[in-house]
Length: 141
Image (cartoon, rainbow, N blue to C red; front, side, top):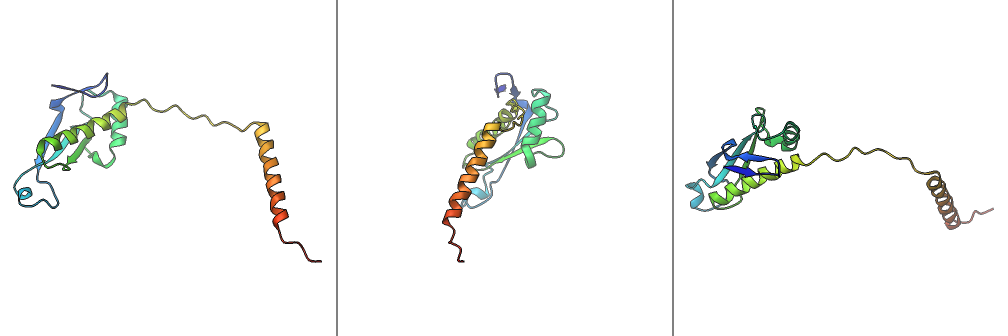
């Protein structure tokens, strides 16, 4: 089954590998025996669904969630049920891929201030300095 990410990118659900484990933290008697936390794994380097540019940006965006083998690992344990944790992990992965699929921002070309802007700035500095001189204590002679 295909999971739509963007208009041009869809993931095959066979590319996602899920492991279930026990959630950490407080939770009473149920948490010791029910494996509700989900660990979602997605191999970025081997995925045929991703274009090369998206693959590179995704690897950069993933940060410490990316293993040395090029696998993104997302752990979800916010919710009490396994199904909601699966949805949460999948949503977080899709959000990350969508962010990587966005085109890079345009390159900023630095501009110089105009001659008039430089003159106005210097006039304002002179006026401000004059105001401060008037506030100073009078000199005793």
